Length: 336
Image (cartoon, rainbow, N blue to C red; front, side, top):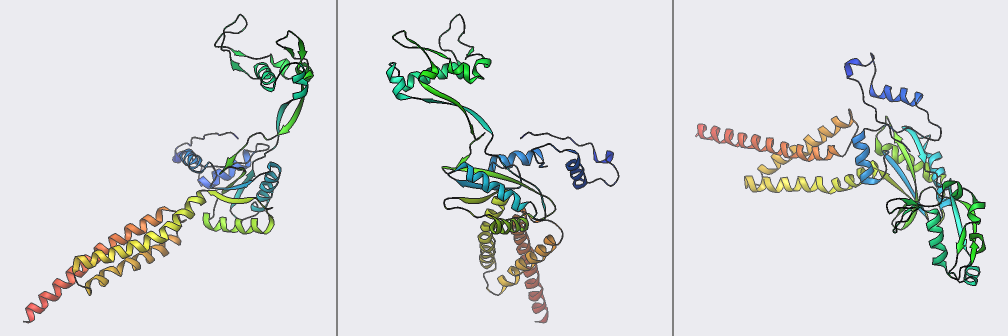
């Protein structure tokens, strides 16, 4: 994974008819890196999403379980399942294989035969292979240097087998006399959540509402991906916060309308005047709801806007009710 920040020219210098969507389409055709997929997001939103959910793309799928090979297989199946969904421009599952490791399997019996324990051999291997700062200055390595064997020795299994070991009895051994050394395949990186290993699938969307696209992807994954016992799939990214905000708004919006009605009762001190002002709130909100959904893509900010609109509608209703009461009272006084 690597990041590239693009700084645009001023809009008046763009080609005629060029839009951000067309620009992304052209970049997708030109920027093709083998093994990588493109995700085009603003830098600030990129950082916020990464800090909030750990996923830079608008939607992410987290496959959790106990076996990395099964997690890798399930993540690739999720990647294949969501790609045909309308609105999905890219889907990429992290590859959990591809790492190369040197395994040093210490034989306890052979090590004990020469008067060595596990920690003795581990300290020798660590000092020889791992670049650590020396605690004791010497002629070969000062306190600020990184001490380890040269890379040409560390890159050769044969030379590692011949790594000399000096025991307390001044017996000289080779590392292969007390341990078996081999190169093993493994994960390039490990991720875990809630104490379980996980693999992530990054999904980029364009041209569709987030909630509708995620629902279609969830149906596609449910049809094609069979989860073994002990494995789970969770949806994250911006969709995670959209779901959380939607559930909260289902409670906040009705509570707001009830609080407004109670405040109107306390203001007018008459039950007949409060409904006249209060019923403007649902009507105004429903009209704005239809207007917004017919022209723009929905987002969490609309919920806060509807709450604010309810307060403004109630305020205008109060003015209208006060004006009507004064007009009625003036007409009655004139008639008398």
